[in-house]
Image (cartoon, rainbow, N blue to C red; front, side, top):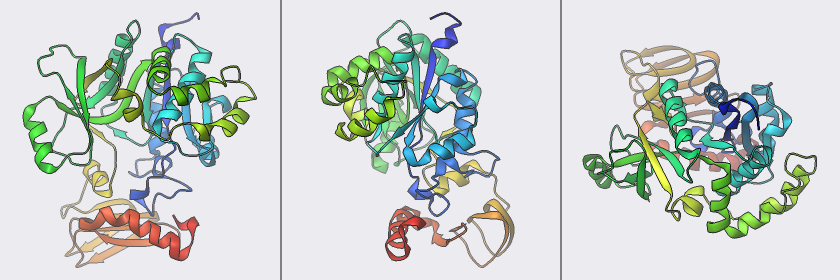
Amino acid sequence: MTGTKKDNYYAILMAGGIGSRFWPASKASNPKQFIDILGVGETLFQATFRRLSKLIPMENIYVLTNKKYVDIIRDQVPQIKEEQVVAEPEMRNTAPSILLGALKIYDKNPKALTVVAPSDHWIKEEDKFLEAIQEAFNNVEHNDKLVTLGIEPAYPNTGYGYIKYDKEDQESLKKVDAFIEKPSEKKAKQFIEAGNYAWNAGIFIWSAKFIIESFKKYLPDTFHVLDKGKKKWNTPEEEKFIEANYSKTSNISIDYAILEKSDAVFVIPVSFNWSDLGTWSSVQAELPSDEENNTTINCRFLAENSENNIVSTIDKKIVVLKGLSDYIVVEDKDILMIVPKSEEQQIKQLREKVMKDFGEDLG
């Protein structure tokens, strides 16, 4: 392949999730990555695509998504080509979708270096993020390494997985000792004190060639299912092959399938401001609040004797609160939800009850 070094840079954007913890603003028909959840003028998907296109040629950014979101993606990023959007016929977790993207990219360019990133994360310091991706690309260009970015923890968060790395390693790229599931608060505090743990952001960098080889070694059944389509990638026959075979792959995450088995996994600890925006409270942490710590999104707001609320509406609706504190108030065209902040983990269950009682289309 001729051209600049950046012609070998590719990205896989993971854009198939539902975002049910942001219901009712986020629904299965229009999940959080495709809405302006922060009220900043662009959706999380648009922000992620724009951010990566500063480093990666736009035509090299591939989107792995559910087939029902294809039209939304094309509407939000009109310049994206049809072949760059890979529609999964059903949800199968991250491992098979990442392999699918890697096989498609490798067919295009055997020298491809690839970043895999969720499309619904919020990163303020974009330059620092891109510097870290560039460093990772430099490390995997001539080395068989699987690299992840680890966010240096700001506090003992119990909602994230953690990455333990070698404390004595003085290099910026450090060998991963272990991936750890979401810990208890006690454990999370111990991780912070130890100083060699990072939040697992789900951002990965590797060569397309090596991740495919890793699948062949550690998840051979899924590899062989999709490898049968190697003559069909990037052709009119690709979609038909995926429809017929994708359900035969393993429903497993990339962490379990590959990263926890490989001895070639490394982490770059980074300190830029990052959030996976997993809850309404995490959104509040990223936005300005008034003097009473009320955070508002897409609304005009009047409050008396009300504090620590999160209020999100559509169409700049006027919201008046009196004597209400520590609540989440979210409105969309069909639903108004008012829930204590202390019970926001119950939102997923509330969504399921509404879908059962009033109809699937409301979830």
